[in-house]
Length: 294
Ligand code: G1P
Image (cartoon, protein in one colour):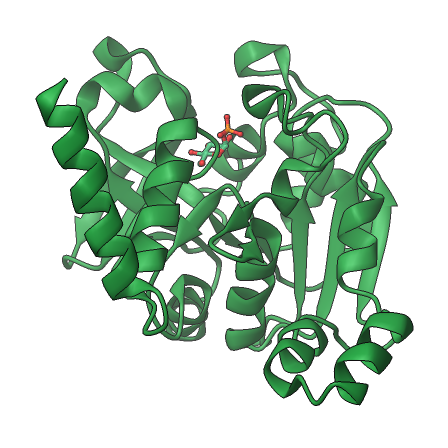
């Protein structure tokens, strides 16, 4: 089984849900406590053994490139002041020269189109896709767990979680076959089905390990839900030709593509921190108290 070495990060979206914050700032740079969302996804990929990272970007996303680049002035200033902790917090994000690549999506035609845009970088080997909006807690991380499932079963692996039936229209949804509680055989996939038509309430979360054959289907450019080129539709075409499994999440997933999920993630991650947890807990209790009295 070939190990997964490459990961694709689609970051071309406009982030309209977070305006005005995202007018000049990529939504992937919004912080959860003090680290941008995209860095959590990159860390998760690294923990799964990923060595090459490609970002599918768009206009106004240069802050992401700068974030993973060296910043000599800042590094110099922190070194001079002996601020080791802050220094490592910025140097940890950086990879080796040449590990990070950026391609422009050019047209906002959907997630499938974004992944297809990275085809020359992916070549002919299995690869991962991570959607930074889906922040998942837990060590060593969801993608590392999925890589184990891939080593055992081969083929394609997607992350799954149960969602309220009424919410299926927001997700790719699986028709499940054999299910051992963790690994679920995927018999079919439907993108954003109406709850009445959904084959289950097992939804895809934004983590994928895919075989390169998906690129051939994506190249057809067929439109699906929302008139977009959907990754889910091309994945569905591989079912039956090779193993296709879902893996139930073991961590907690925060939907940072929504304001409520983003705020929830900030609170949850702050409460987990040794340096902040107690203070944040107390302040939140006070805030809740004030709001109860209103
Ligand atoms: C995308 C995928 C969908 C998946 C979801 C997970 O949808 O198309 O299949 O369930 O991510 O977050 P989007 O959130 O981009 O509409």
